[in-house]
Length: 355
Image (cartoon, rainbow, N blue to C red; front, side, top):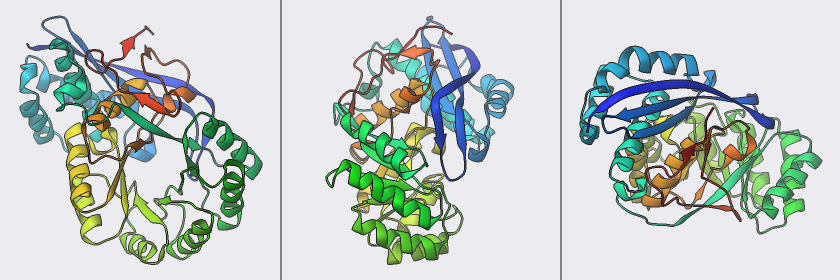
């Protein structure tokens, strides 16, 4: 079955309320939707979130696919997806988010062509539902505590965004812990905002509050600082922006810089690359967290199938943020009682309602 057509469409979906982090104030989720159409008339979908800090925008990703990658895949046999993927990497370095959206659309079309869920094509289910952790924006302690209580009431674990100012971040985390009790899983995400000295101070204080994971405390390329924080932290240190591919994961693990790695399909460019990282983590006793930022549920659906079929990925995933945006043209994925059930429909298991 040949790939007959590749279409791209930029999506802009407003947040129901701003997502505030140490480095951004998001009011609109921007991304690129890719549609692959086969000679048999089957359509497959892929999506990637895109923003300048990630090094790609919807405009650059669309340009790369339309001007370079489309010509490489049209006319190819869809069953040759592994070879197509290698050809794509050989003809173009970088641009992982553009590549991941195109790959997801192709593998969705392939699974739909054979009338099977994507997880079957990925080797079968290891788990039937994915437990969800959701973000709480940087804000006043009382506001963060209230938002956290609402999420916990839905059965969700918590990821608290912090600002990089220890005198403000500690009261925020303390207020949330007091509001939700001692049994709720909490991690914090600094988005590269701390230096090593203050990150260590904060980590020691967070241990007393029962925080389990400290994500990306220092800037992504400051590996000596990351190692220093890991050496002195009483809680788990997680790399996010510091791990952009399998080679980064190898380096981080070899040098004992982290306890956990946060990865995602758009971030590293393919389902296969995430799996390689997950297997490496599992072999070395490192937690592998899977995440996807707010955008169309098409992106989350790919992550759900991947997490369902990959034992090395943590059962607690940072997904479901499609619930905080409006205007998603797809339906079929929901968060219920803190979990997402793995869809059993064809391909990704989500459907297009229209634009």
